[in-house]
Length: 169
Image 1 (cartoon, rainbow, N blue to C red):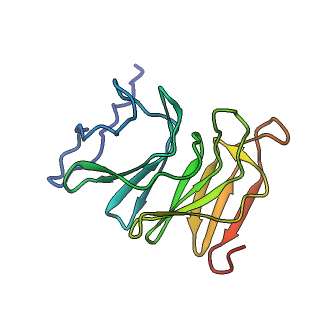
Image 2 (tube, rainbow, N blue to C red):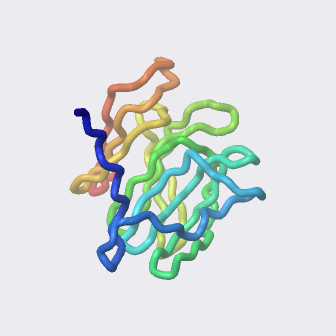
């Protein structure tokens, strides 16, 4: 007899029970609200940053900050570019956003940092390959851009780029 796998158990809450619980919905510029294609990361094990994305008005430059301890969202400073389908990576108190696409669908090579304490976005050296739907990671003092979809080849990327936070290159 074939057995089906058990259903996922969800996440553990502070009481140790395993279940999914609703939290405050993500703020949107439209009603009814929805947002997709955001870049997301956890900063200082305290805040969830959800930046950019797309809603009924198109690509967004919105910075959303979620505080799970009080189940509330706040809005941070808007970035200067509106994109979605990029990726978010965190390092210490900084949130980084890589790539994405604007309404014109001209794939971006952008690399931005958001400082949660100063509520400020900063443009950093662009990636060598414009891409979206990529993966990203922070390891040591490096930020990695991994794979994704490229405008230069109009295909999926296998390339990996690395940015040194120490050397800023």
